[in-house]
Every structure is written in C-alpha cells, then in structure tokens.
Image (cartoon, rainbow, N blue to C red; front, side, top):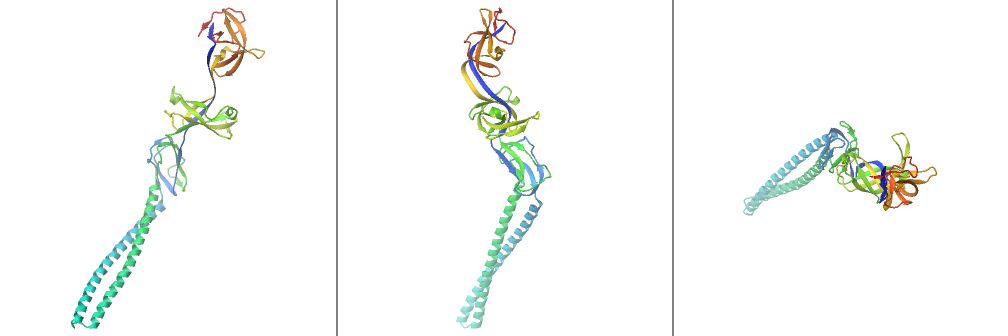
Length: 358
C-alpha cells in the first residue's frame, strides 16, 4: 500500500493567470510634418538601436521650399558680394579724390590753381563720401537679408532631416501602424519603441481574485522561452478599476490589470506571453499532507486513513489552507504519522495493509 508521512512544510496559495511582457518605458515616434512614407526599414518585433533609421519620408512642398530658399540665398549672397565690391571701388575713388584735392589746395596756395577748381574737387570728395554712406546702408540690408535667408534655409534643412525617421532609443518595435505610400499628418504615430532596459509583466486578474492580491507580494514568471527558468517579480501596481472583457469562450468577465516588476529579463522581450503566479499566502512550519490523502465524508467532515500497527484507521481532521498539492492540518494528526496516499480508495477501518512510504 502506497503511503506518506505527515510532515512539517510550507503551504503557499497562488493566483495564476496568463500575462505579457511590456516595456516600462515606451516611446511614441511621431511625424513632425505632413509627409508621404517612402520606405520602411523595420517590422514589428525588430530590435533597433538608438539613432537607427526606421523609415524615410518625403514632402514635395518642403523640397520646393528648400529649392526656392537655396536660389534666394545664392542671389542674396551674390548681391552682397557685388555691394562690397562697389564699396571697395568707392573707397579707392575716395582715396584718389582726396589726394587730388590735397594737390589742388597746394597748387591754389602757389597760385597755380583757381578757387573754382579747388571747390570742384571738394564737391567730388563729398559726392563720393555720400555714395559710400549709401553703399554701407545697401551692404547692411544685404547682410541682413543673407542672415535671414540662411536661418530660413537652416530651418528647412532641419525639417528635411526630420524626413529620415530615427529611433530615439535602443529597444523593440512594439507597433508599426503605418504603411509604405501612406500620407501622414503632423503628430501621426509612425512607430512605438519599447525600451529593453526595463521590462515588466502585465496580467489581468478576475475581480474576485483581486481581493487576495496586495502590492509587494512576490510573483513568479514562467514561459516556454525560459525553459526551466523561473523569473521572480513583485506586484507593484493594481489598477483601481475593473473593466469588462470577453473571454475566449465568449463569457463576459470583470478583469483588473496588475503590473509585476521583474528582477531579470532573461530571454524575455516586449510582447512575449508568460504565465504569472502571484503568491497571495505563505504559511511555513505547518503540518501538511498531500491533497489526495484527504477526503470529505458524507457528513461533510474531512478524513484521512492512517495506518496504525498495519491496520487502517479512519480519522477526522481539521484542515487549514489548501493548494493544488498540499493540505494544511490544523488538528487530528501529528508529525510522523503514516497515511494512505490515496484516500479515495474504498478501505474499511481495520483492514490490514503493508505501507510502502514514497
């Protein structure tokens, strides 16, 4: 007869539900301007690096504005250069006229020139000085125009650079809601990137189960991709509101989102499905027996079949917490007692058996 011993052990109660991995930090990549999507270099689920090109856009209007601004800037620079050349020429003319005036004054003092000739030279110097003053105004205006056009050109070049969409972080592409050839408006979501430096697990508990769950309780994460590994985590957030969700069987259920912060990411990435087990109760150093060793009689009392001196003895017991494997014994048994492992067997009290403890 297969038998077991009453032992001191630990009973844990858990709430288990499926969940999925998500990034703690998610970045929404948006279009900064109206544009057309020319090329998409990524797919949902791809891992990307910060600065990596995600897609290329085009904006015909921006291209025209760039071309126009470039032409205007080139013309303004040419006009400024011409104005500066004119200024240099006038400066040389002024220098020559001033020399001529100085010579005329000398000749006038020596009686070799008339006052009229001297006056004409003075007028020539004044005329050139006035032209230089006007030319300085022209140059300042041209310089201001060049500076403004350079600023406009720089802004347009920055907008052009925005047409090459880059990833703001290293992570995983969580969503890609646009297609090649699509025309998008400013603020349109182009992609969602999830950071892999911080991951968490989101599960949705039945509202009836949520009362057992508290922030700070330990949780254990398993998944096929992890093999035998178990990732430990902690309940860090419980949504204050429930919402209705239709199950796979078409049943409307009240569900509450719960967030689990995990210690390690291992081979997990955003979007992976996992199994979440939240430890809602833990009792250590209590008497425990296998669940199959306990049965419920017709009167509604829990019983076990103990083996005393090779004979079956039916005993009533008081149970405590139960999980899928163990039952806590609060009264009726002592540590070390031997029980029939399978209490569902139809054995009469006093039946002689030979226990085989496993």
